[in-house]
Image 1 (cartoon, rainbow, N blue to C red):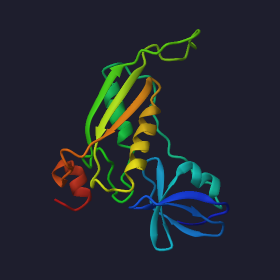
Image 2: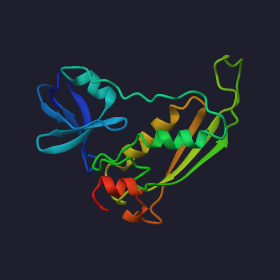
Image 3: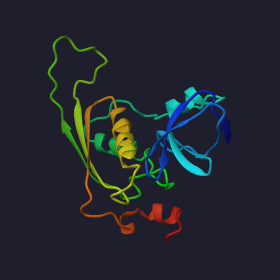
Length: 191
């Protein structure tokens, strides 16, 4: 889908993560939306832009990606809900979510003790949690790494009973294709 930029919009080049600004009048090709950002073709290069940036800077507004089912989970469901949120995050160069790609090494959910200075609203979940995600990248020098980490934090933070999200980026053990799910390998033609 082709669009024309109607106001300057911040983006980053893929794969090196170099920040750029798309200027008014720039013609872009929008690739299929996945996760919390969009991948574009601009001047023969791939770039990443936030959904909010797209909504503000295009000739026609883009629809934000919805994350249904964010109701308060019980304690046994929370890790599954966190993983479901992580599955909405994609490596912008690969059409597979980062969980099935094998980039997530561990997801830990722990109670979160917050200090409050006053009364808590009735609709605030009574039990809050902190989430710690251990993940890697397909290559240590991936320029998109900081953006993928932020996508994970943003996605998991949308859960109503999550008070804090930490993402630990590690490179040991290094990622290999064997860590991909069967579905990911099938989608990428590796089976």
